[in-house]
Amino acid sequence: MPLLPDIALISQVLMFGNRRAFDSLVRKYQAPVRRLLLTLTAGDKALSDDLAQETFIKAYTALESYKNHSNFATWLYRIAYNVFYDYIRSRKETCLMDEVIDEVETAHGQELSDSSITADINEAMRLLRPEERTCVTLHLMEDLPIDKIVEITGMPSGTIKSHVARGRSKLVRYLKNNGYER
Image (cartoon, rainbow, N blue to C red; front, top):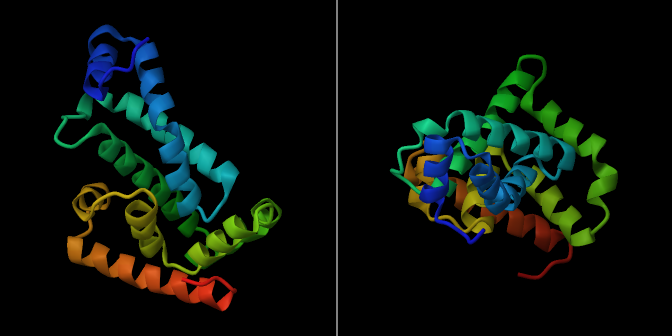
């Protein structure tokens, strides 16, 4: 099947119940959504896979609410962002945010050490507050402009710029202290 624009695939799902069209959307966006969630979870592959699956389930069930005001990727990133923060909020009821991050570090320390650069970047990302990590991931790693991050997170653009600047500064400092040159 030739690549169709997102809106054509969405229309096929909504009008004809064409699940293959949604499968095409999943294949197209699965890697970027997983990459976003992998960074937000500080390298926890199993958790990011679970959250990605939940993201696509929520996207499928809410597809009729997509109004084409922004591109589909932005809408999908917003869902992934909300799924991640729903997970954090549900964990916050029983433990503090730092304990969740410590749990991720402890549970997946072995996986993160496979590649030293990946491990160092994941370690550096853990130093960031969740909001900084989100903004840095979306802006620097996913290369999204500030206005798209505003749509995804609902944060004001000035706040996003501050989070990116602070996050970048923390990452540079950590990486320099660990032998990387700028």
